Length: 104
Image (cartoon, rainbow, N blue to C red; front, side):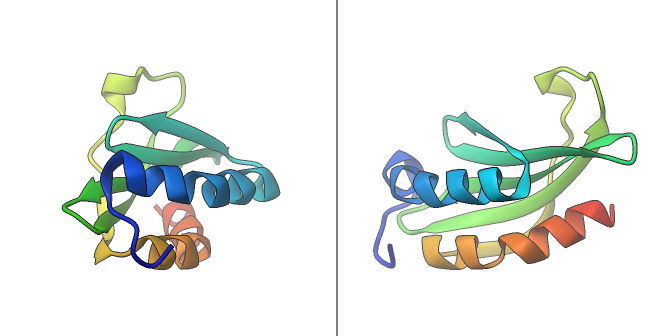
């Protein structure tokens, strides 16, 4: 997974690991063009980790919190956690991202 390209090709390589993480941690995995979002409900808020494709081989990872029962358009812009990381590093920082999102 070290040399995967960002975008849908990079997500295709990363999706199985994101799915395993989601199942193991009781969170949902939302997939959209150019992004993936791990989502869960905690303390009256929806929370998430947003992974966005950036360029040929890197991703931006951010965290977000929003009021439950909102529409997709009401999800705020993520707070950056890491920028320009490769696919392997994205998977490696998910536990830290969950802690950071729960702290929002």
